[in-house]
Length: 176
Image (cartoon, rainbow, N blue to C red; front, side, top):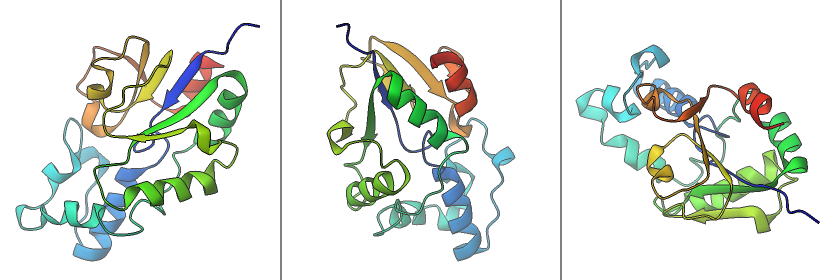
C-alpha cells in the first residue's frame, strides 16, 4: 500500500486569524485602529505607535491569548477534506510564548476535533519530515526540502520566491 503524502499546516496566520485578534485587542485596549491596508510588508508591531509597541509581547504572553483567535475563513472545511487525503500534521512554533502551548492545543481540539493529538507538533524550529508545508513564515522553509506553500499574510506580501496561496479555497484548488 502506498503511503499518503505528508502535509504540515501552520497555525498562526494560516489556520488562526492572529492579526485579526491583534487588531481587536489594540482597538479595545488602546483605542488604536490598525487596518490591514496599513500592514503590507510589515510586522504588526511595526505599525503600532511607539509608546505601546512593547505591549504586544505582553499580550501574547497572557494566558488565553491564543485560545480565542478566530478561525481563518474556509479553513475548517478544507482542512477536513485534506485530512482525508493526506497524512496531515499541525505544526506550530508554540514554545516561544509561555502560555501558547496549552491555548493552542485547546483551540485545535475545539475547532479541528478530527485531528488527533498524535498529529499535532508543537516545536521551536519546524524541522519536520513532510512532503508539503503550508506556512506564512519563510524562515520555516529554509531547511525544508518539500513543496513550500506560502500562505498570504500582510507581513509576507513583498515575498515572491515561493508558491503562494491566498486563501483556503486556493489551497483546496491546488491540493484536493
